[in-house]
Length: 612
Image (cartoon, rainbow, N blue to C red; front, top):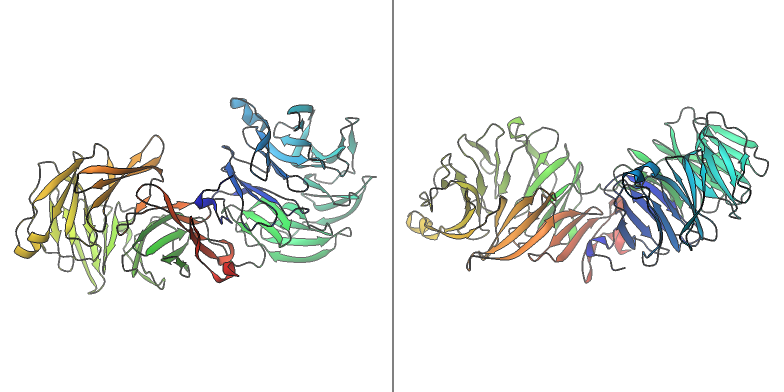
C-alpha cells in the first residue's frame, strides 16, 4: 500500500486518545488505534507505521496481532470486526452489523488462536463470538461475559474470559463448558495467560492476582492500596515479568513470584488502558494521542494550529510552540496558554497568538520564546490579528482596532475600524471605515500615508489585504467583487489610487491573501456542509481562477510569500501543499523531542537523534 507523504515517518499517528494497543513479541509487530478510529500498524524492523487507515468508528480496546505478525484484527464501536494482512492491509475477513443495531455489539476485545485461523471477539452485549476467518463464518456464540480482555491458550482450545461477576473463567471450545478458577475478591477487569501457560495474571479492584494452572488456585496477589488506580497489566516479551499501569506510574513485578522489581513515572498526564511492553520497555497510551515511556523525553502534542510566512513556520502543540526556519525545527518553547490561532512576521522576529481560555492576544519573541506582553482582555476572541514589521494589530471584542508599535513603544486605537490589514514590512496599515471605504495609514503615526483610494462602487468593502513585497492592495466588497489597487502613483505623487475589478467571487470569502510577485491572490471560503474550506487562486492579470484546492481544514493558511497552503496533519505535522493542491513538504515533530522534515524525494533534515 502506497503511503501518502503525510503518513511517512509518522511515529505518532494518533490525534485522539490512544484506546487500543497490541504487540507481538515474536515478530515485533505493533498495532495501535484511537477513539477516532485511526489504526496504525508497525511491522517487524520498522521505526514508523507502514499501514495507516480509518475504521470510520471509534476503536475501544479491540485490536489484536497474530503470532508472527502476519495478521492484525480490529473491532470498532459499530460492531465491525475485520482482519488485515500486515503486509499490504488487504482485508482477509470482515463481519459487520448493519444499521443502528451495530453499536449494540461494540467490540471490547479480540484474540487470535495460535494458528491465526480463528478470531474470538468480546462485545458490550456480553457475547463472545468465534469466527473462522478462512471460511468467513461464525462458529459459535457464548453469552454472559464482561471485562476488557479475551485470550486463547497455547493449544487454542480454551479461551480465558471474564464473566458478568468479574471472575476469570476458562471456556472450553470443545466441550463448550466453563471451567471455574478460584474466585478473586472484588473481581477483575483484565486477565492474561503467562507465556508458559502455567499461570493467569489478572487485575481488578484488589490489585494483581496470580492464578496457577491447571488447578485454578490463587498462588499470589499484590494489593493496589496506595496506588493511583490500576488501569491495565502488560507482560514482558520474555514472559518473566509483568507491569501494572496506574494513573501515574508503571509498577514492574517478577514472575511467577510476583515480587516488586521497580516503579517509574510513565509521563502520561491522562493515561488510557492502551499499553504494551516491547523490546524498548513499557509504553502507555495517553488521551493526548501519544505513547509515553518511562524516562523518555517529553513529546509534543498534536498540532492545534499552524501558520507561516516565507522561511518561517509556526506550529502550536498544546501549550508549546515550535518555530521552524526552513527545514529545521528550533527548540520549542513553553507558553502561558494553549493557543487556537498564531501568526509570525515575515522576518521571523515576532509571534502573536490567540489563547483558547478567554485571555487576550499574546506577543512573543519568535527566536527566543520570550513573552513580551498581553494585549489585554478586550482582545479576547478577536476576529483578526496581524503582525507586520514591528507592528502588532488586533480587532477589539467591543469593536474597533488597536495596534502596537513595538519599536517606539506606542499604542494606537481607532474605535470606528471594521477590519484592517498590515503590510508584511509594516509600512502600511489599511483600515475600513464604517461606510465601507478604505484608508491607508502610516502605522507609526496613525495618519494617512496616501490619499484615500477612489471607491470602485457603492458596495462597502468587507476584506482588505496587501500584496506581499509590492505596492498593491486587494479589496473584496460586500457583493463579492475582488479588486486591486496599485498604490505606486499614490505614494509618488500623492494622488488617489484608482483600482480595477478582477473577479466576482460569488462565494462568502473569509480570508484574503496577496502573493509575492503580484500575479496571484488567494481567497478562502468555508463549506458548512462538509466543515471544510476551499482556497481559490486568482490570476490578477487575466482575472481568472487558475486553481481551486478543496477539502482543506477550516483554518488552512496561505503563506503570502510562496502561496503554499499550510495546515496541521496527523502525527504532529505541518503539511504544505502547493497552489494546485499537491503535497509539497511535511514538517513533523517526532516523539521524545525529535523532528524531521521531508518531501516526496526523501528526508530534507532531521534532529540528531533521528540522523543517528
